[in-house]
Image (cartoon, rainbow, N blue to C red):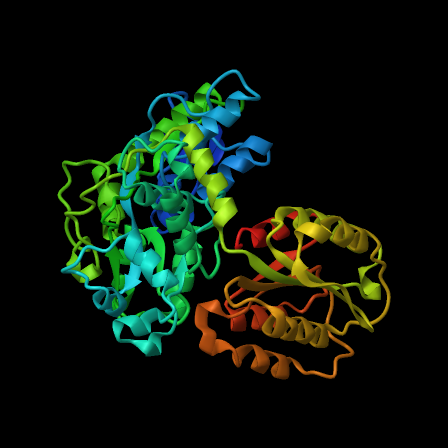
Length: 557
């Protein structure tokens, strides 16, 4: 009996100790509240570890529910579009900057009776929008003694001599990049800054200014040097720093990405040339990374409280110091700036000296419309697998998604469509889309499947067509979709990749291949080798997500 009593006391003692450790026990058996944050890729290196550490600490709400945070990375404007369509319902939206929030609220009010983002969200971290440029190239332009700006970029972009005009013919043409202003904050910041520079203003940009020939000309000149666009600033930075100066001479990025790259170089993990941040002399914007807890029906009071707790955690000094170690400026001005925010890492903390005023919603929309008018056209070849394995839902979805993809292209773009199976058939030659749009869609709508998979020969034919007929002054790209493996071509994969690599001297201006592995039988290794050789991108796809894949490809031009 005494043994049973002793055992019972021991059990009670253990339970008492467990109950006193409320947090861990609650994490195991208690209630849980999950909040989601949708944020831009440029702060993933900071925010993802913060999410992991926060979840590991088992923070709780007032009622004892354990808070779990999940994060999804997406372009700043692309993420709002996903919220607007109902595709994603996050608790928190954290775009790169607040510049698009008024536009987002205006769109949200059209279908709701309130703003999506109310009040003034707190800034998580800060980072100026900069032109990242390889240091030797910046020095050739006169940096750091000479202030560089959009007028210099425009002059270099339109120079028939390219870098030869500055004594460096071996660098070839000037190759520039920024993200798509309809999907990404940095791209939107870039084209608004171009408009300000053309108007000679830092404040008070108007819709009337956008009709000024000086504004139109400067934006047209800068955009003429673009190699491609895209949705993600982080992805753009990765491409620039991985592929080097032959791929991109300069790109619109955030200051923290310059610091991150220089930290890698100084640590010996990157062998690239030094890169520096150029703060345009005409002015720039801050990426202030607002933490917007959404004013939406799906955000409960409990979720809001949990999101506020995570916000408090992120704004605490230890987390802010970790952000600074990655190249961000803390949102708390009482925290002094120190390494790696220094000249050794390519940045100048005395900049930016001129910060541009955020324009009105109408002006922002007007700038986006102007960019659509003057942006660099694309010469695009679509290569589509119509072999027998594409039967059923695959071919039906491929037809429908390609029809929608054609609608994403502008009238000024030039399009060629090649269908392949046992035979290779050109459905439409590489000519301007506007006059033939409906005829192209009629051809696509009538596609039927059958035959073998002659992938390599079809891609080679499209690639050669672009080389021979494509305009070097346009973005040149291919979109290749296949659901299987080549079983008929006379050309080998090695021969095809060698042909693609033969154009490597063009650097970032070379033809880009965007390959789509359509289903589980597609050879992803083969498709990746094609896209990587060109500087493009490989996608995995199914009939369920093929529309999204084509939408993403369209953002590159």
